[in-house]
Length: 225
Image 1: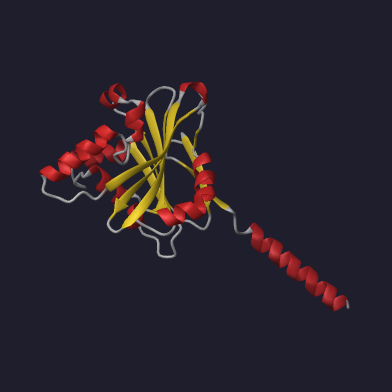
Image 2 (image 1 turned 180 degrees about the vertical axis):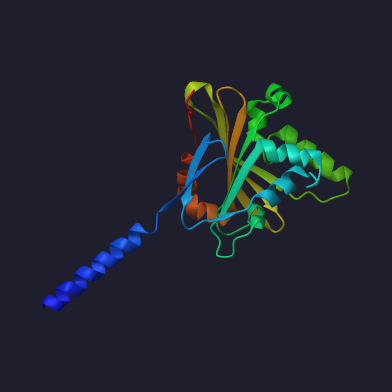
């Protein structure tokens, strides 16, 4: 009997230690400590440089790429058992891309709520038309087709910061991908922080609550001084 009790106590202790050793979340801050969020620890962190090259189109050896490396921080997380940055544009598991841009003087002058909506992918009608014109002019088939707006909210933020959260669908190849996009301009108008969560539409419908928890953790941090 004593041995049984001792064994049960040992098993409980091992279980508790195991639980303590496996945090529920991965906590993330950007390079300058201005932006914070968390993702479930089941997500794998990835090098986001291939995403930056895809979105910017800059040659890795160019001056534009060097400037982007200095002004832009980014990271990515994939919940797939076979994680890949390619899952940003198509996956049956949630994918998270987050980036913080320190704006140039020219960018600060041009920033707007609509620019926040279009910061990663074309969302507004004007940018979708421009994207279609550019791809048609180069003789390419558009990657992003059949846009559907699901929700568009202005965020209520403290201290003069501005933000939007937009949810939308795009057909990419043979699948429809749902994107949940949050973009925040800080109170000084100097930095834009963006989180883009995506997965195929059936995945999003089943796991929208997880998207909400991740997106709601995405916040600006007030630095001293």
